[in-house]
Length: 507
Image (cartoon, rainbow, N blue to C red; front, side, top):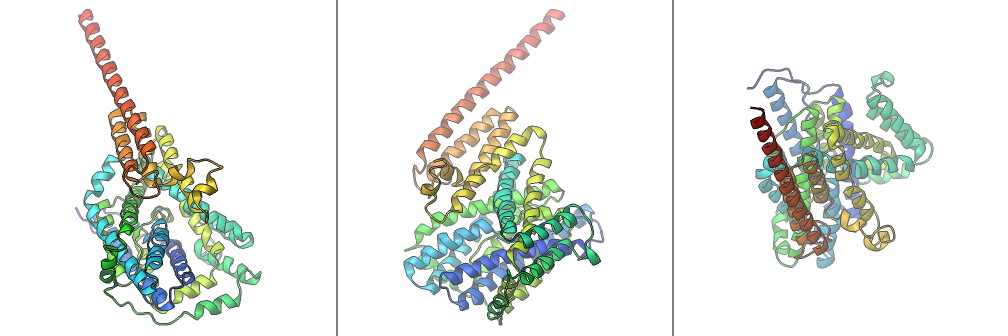
């Protein structure tokens, strides 16, 4: 039943959360721009189509999640509800850049066609996510929380906290100072001078230090300002023009789109579950549908990157944010995209000054994974985190990952391939073993065998019999669990029979 509550449109805590979310999205936008320009794509496509299109997706999703937060606040009569953080999925972004856009250009040798094909791929990805959202709550109910949050913690520790900590230490006089400001202000909750939000204070001080000590130059400002202009949000038929290529000569790209879309859906599911553990329960199906619709709308305006609910949601919750930070993010990114300000900001603000904010967000997610589960499930959380260490190693080498890491271990690459699926399944199996639910453990082992057989796990691409050794291993494990279930059932029957005999003897 809805209740009348004074849920504020904006509050002081939203400022910190806004800068955390803004910098997260900004970092992705900068990577997109730098990568595409480096590949030779013209400014007219990068800043005239892709960035504005991505901004449309960010605007739509952030405004809708602000609306969802208000609805939840009214439903539960609370004013401490935090809107979900939302933006471009970083892992998926890299896949679309190098697994879709680059192959499309390689085969067509035409930047315009390559962009249209990638936009079509994004539209299809969004549509798949909307369709998959129907089963979102059911899937969520079948997978133990320890497995979901453990997989998410693996991403947070490696790609977010770990990666950003490396960037923090790349310029220590900037990064370390900003990091300590975040620790003191956000974790220690000590007020900054003039009550400036800690994240904003860290960015300002880090940027000033970078320019003062020569790590940033005025030339970088000039380069960024040269891209400032007017880039209107104009819909196009590019997504539909690219369909003819996506379903003919480049149909092989569908083998990339499908698994990464499933990953994206699971990422949203994980992050919604993390927020539920933190106290704000949202409908995972609705969130997956919003992400899909946002992606499709973004593609209609020229964007080519799927969107998702961010793990930063929990960090925003811990900051005490409401819905204002989400609304502000939508407004600011809309203005930044149509004016080209994103390019200027990326040139002015050093990454080392931004990175500590995301270090905090990543660590918050790891902490939540443990805090929201009973102590007995800690092994499940931990084992679910490990596949992402392998995934991080294999994706951070420019050379062939298999050759590069072979001397360390031949298991790194297959463990890292399909890390999200592997993490959830290993975590779930561990939970079911702890709870002695061996039939459920066997079912997840059979699912793992099927995913391995078709290449969703432990294989570089989709194919029949893609990872036969792993498929067989999971089937053997399933048989073992069935045996344990049978043994457990017989032991229970004997205990009941013995108790019955004792009762009869006593009477």
